Image (cartoon, rainbow, N blue to C red; front, side, top):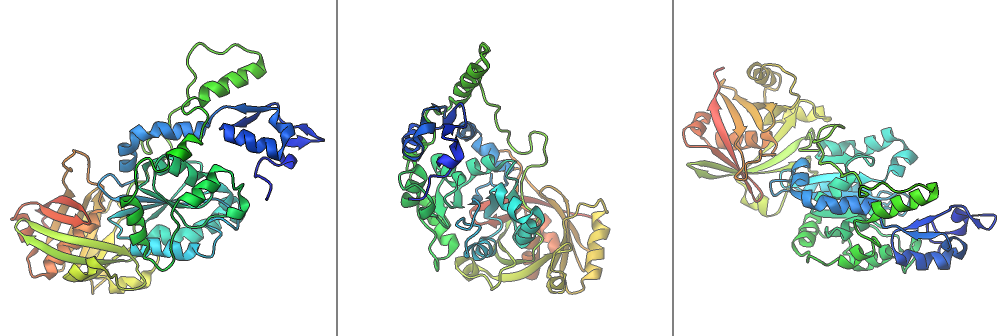
Length: 453
C-alpha cells in the first residue's frame, strides 16, 4: 500500500520526533490510520473537526440565494467540474479535453450553468496564463472558472451535480448531499480504508460513449436524499464545532483564557453581496451559438429557444426533432471572427455606452448577411433592430417569485428572429401581450415595445 498522503513519517517526524505540538485531525477514523502510518505522531493527535466543512454546512440555508448568484435560480441546472492536481487527477487525465468539449458543446446554454473549481496547484504548476489559455474556448462557451481562493465552496453548495475525482472537493460535495459523478479516480493513490476511497466505490462513474447530458440528468433525477449521509458522518468529529475546538487548542498553547463569547467562524458570503467582485451570474457567451427555435403560439406569442455554444455538429435529439427553424448567433467580440459572416443574428454584449439604436444599425451595416442585430442595454434587456429599421426594446419581466429573470437577453432576441422568419411582422409582438420565451423547463415573460429609429 502507498504511504497515506500527509501521514507518512517523512511529513510528520524530524529525527524520530514529531514536528508538531499537535497533529489536528477531523475525525477519529483518521486517528486509526495515523496510528498505523506514523505511531509517533499519533501521540500528538487532536480531534478538532473540519472548519472548511463547517462553513459549507452553514451555506445550506443560503442555497436559494447562492443559486441565484451563480445564475441558476430559475430552474437551470448548475454543474460544477472539479479536479484536484497531479497526473492521476481529472484535469491530468487524457479524457479531460474531450469532457470539457462535450460539456460546453452538448448542454444547452440556457438550461445548464457550468462552473469549474480547479485545485490551485494546477495553476501553480502550469502557470495561470497557460491555464487560462487552455480554458479560453470553454469560457467563451459559458464555463465559469471559479477562483480557487474565491467562492468555490459556495459553488459546490449551490450545485445540482459535481463532476470530479478523488480530491477533497468532490468528497465535500457528496458529504453535503450533492449528486456526484466521478470522471476519474486514483484508487492506487489512496488508502483503501479511507472515506475518499469508499466514495470511489459508491459513486457513479462517467461512462464513455453515453451522452454526457443523459448521465448528468440521470444522476440528478435519480439522486436519493441521504445517499451519502455516511460520508457526511465521516467528514467531521464534531459538525459545526470546529471553531470551539480549535480556539480551545490554540489558547491552551498560548496559556491564555478563552474569551467569554462563543467561538464562531466567519460565514461565507453569497457572491456579489460583499467586496471582491461581481457574482458569477450569467456567463459572457462569446462563442458562436447555434439556435433551434419553434413558434409555440401566436397569441400571446410564445417561442421555444434552445441554444448551444459552438457545437462541432448540428445538435440532435428531442430538441432538434421538435424545432421548426435554426439560426446562428455571433457576438462582435467572438474569438472566432471568421464566423461573423455566417451570423443570422449579430450581437453586442459590451455595454459600451453607445446609443443602442445607432449601434444596432452599425452592426447591420458591417454584417450585410445578418437579418437582425441586438445590443444589450442592461441585465435582462436588449434592443433588436431589423433591416427595415424596426426597433424593439426587450425587457424581462420579474418571475412569479419576484426575483429578476437571469436569462441572457439574447435568447429573447433569438425568439424575435424566429417570429420574424416565420412570417410575422415584428410589431405584432407588441399587440398580442408579453412575449413568452421557453428555454427547457423555464418560461420567461418579456415585455416588448417599439422604439423609434
